[in-house]
Length: 261
Image 1 (cartoon, rainbow, N blue to C red):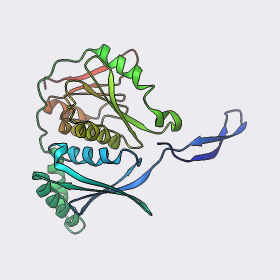
Image 2 (image 1 turned 90 degrees about the vertical axis):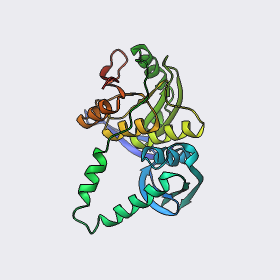
Image 3 (image 1 turned 90 degrees about the horizontal axis):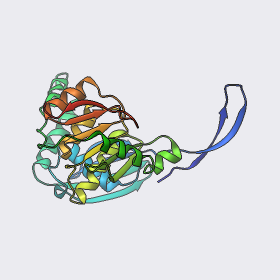
C-alpha cells in the first residue's frame, strides 16, 4: 500500500532547488473495538488490518492465541478506520477491567500507581531455544532490503519480519509505526497457525520495552533490532529469557542477552 503522491522542493546545500514528487506513507487513525468496547485509537498504516487486530490483542495480553480473536470487521469511516473483533477466554474479562481503569484515569489521582504496577508486571518466560548464529542475522538483513516496498517508495515506514534459523525471511509486515508493524507480523503468523519459534523476529525499530513485551507475549524467543535497546528493554528481555540482538548491521551485531537471563 502506498500513499498519494505529493509535491515538494529538494533544497541543496548550495541553495539550488528542484521540484520533486514523493510518495507519502499512509497514516490514519485506527480505532480498535473488542466486544463492543472501545479500547484504543492507534495511528497506523491502514493495510493488513485483520493481522493488526489479532497481533494487537496478543501483544496487549487480551488473547492467548489467534483463536480467541474472531469476527474481525474492518470499516473505513469519515475520519479513519474502525476495527471490531470479538474476544473469548480470559481476554474478555481483562478487557472490561482495562476499559474501566482507563475511564477512571481522568478522575482518579492514584491510577498512575496501577499503571506503574502493570508496566512492571513479570512477563512469561520464553521457551527454551538454541542460540542463534550471527550469520542468520546477516542473511536476514540482506534479504529484508528487498522486502520493504512501502519503505522503498516513501522512506518512512518500519518493518517487522520473521526469519528461520538460517536467516531466510518468511513473513514481513510494514507500518508507519514500529509497534504496529510488529503487531501485524505476529497477528499474520498467528492467524496462519505458525509459531515465532524456532526462528527470530527482526525489527527495523528502536528496541523499546514495548517491542520486547510484544515479542515475548506473541511467543518469540529471539529478537533482533536495527537500533539499540533501552535500559528497560534489556531488563525485561533478561527477566523473560529472551535472546536479544541489537544494532544489527551488514557486518556486525551486538549480543545484548543470550537468553540465559
